[in-house]
Length: 108
Picture 1 (cartoon, rainbow, N blue to C red):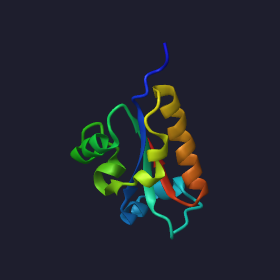
Picture 2: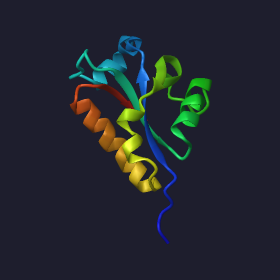
Picture 3: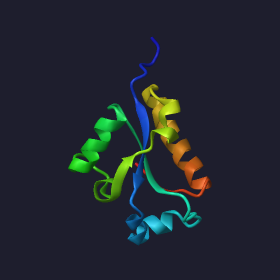
Picture 4: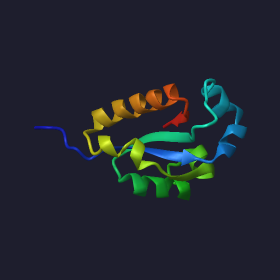
């Protein structure tokens, strides 16, 4: 039976204030200040529903809860939806790719 295509990756823009967090800065030594800071995650929900949960503090990443601004579908919509295993891999690949492009990245 083929894997069900019901998982999504997503990218959330974070406020530049996240750069005040030493842990975030250490994770992004090659950050290009002309690019946004982002959070990359994967979910069985819609990206919109997952973002709302982060902001409400439900299974939330603290950077998203505190600094999350908006979803950036132009960076992830091409990939969705997909099976669970593919979404897990895509989350990592997307985070690595964005970091290589100079984005400040935190990955869930």
